[in-house]
Length: 466
Ligand code: PLP
Image: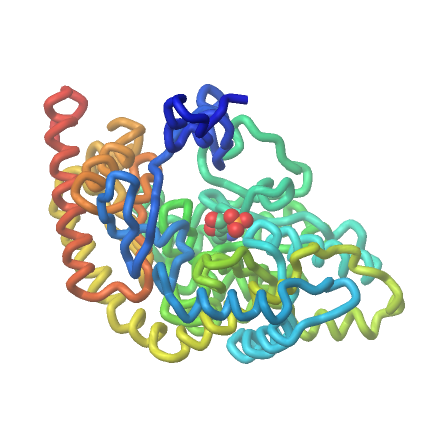
């Protein structure tokens, strides 16, 4: 091993560890284990500071998770206090106050009879838990064949084997295996890319008819669950057409298909409510998965809200001894639950209200970017939005342009003080919920300048004539 601080030897480059030893998520084969990503040193409120000392608006709030912003002393303190009180307890044989209290508080916010919660370590493990629970209950019910899972194009549900098998974004699965025999895919409910000439109403009917026809073709007796993000996040902030989610919810109920609402992104204030399924979309799912904003990203925690109807059915089943053989060492982690409780206090104590108040302004201001010729559509809900670039508004072809256009915009915005989440031809904005109107103005002004500079570059390089 190379000595690092031996007198006389040059100091190791600061990020040598990353370039030589760290494997980051979603790497390309050619860069694996040998890649330096933008080093971030500190965070404060909606801002982060990179290693060059440049202060950036944290446009994606980390990964849609730093909902209360960086450097919240209340959150840091509660974690330290909990660690000094009880840093860990086994959830196999014991329990802690914070986990029991958090379960009670979450049940009060969840729609319908979602009175139970199973805590996990993040979003993928939450989706995995919901799916394994569906398998378990159908085994207990004596319906071992009712296990197929319906998922949709554009979806992102995680990076464990089963949760990743549901993913429907282009390219996610090109080089990865999956449990394809367990999953049936439906269309992405993207109004922007609906068939040419079709009204939104006709598109909604098309999606509902496709669902009904799929259930008839495959057989309701073989389908265990439908999993859906209320607003597809990583797929490009796809807001489904009005009425679509409730209609699909009814079809699930009619066919005894468990509806799993994946709220890993949309919960904890992103859409102005603790859970969006009931309060924003008017549906009562059988399960809701959550993670990310539950701790504002200060601690890895996730969970699944589960309907009391289902737990009751298990307790009264012919197999009360059947075991749900599933759990994580870090399920119900006391530090995670303690920080989640404080996070919830702060959300309830004004941040949800603030998010609801600034959301219309956030959407309006971003929408003004549609006057730029490169922008095909700006869409969103609450404090999540997507600026989608297209070569031309007629064909809406995302890739005719340049498949790194999002990265180009990100590079310019970085210079100007904004971190963007580039997704191929899209820029996703989901800042901390505490963002003010003035900060929204700054964010939109930087994005406008970043896109304008990208348009100039593309013209100069002969890649675009817009
Ligand atoms: N579900 C949704 C809707 C997500 O957006 C994500 C992550 O972005 C996940 C699940 C997976 O969560 P995690 O990365 O915490 O495992």
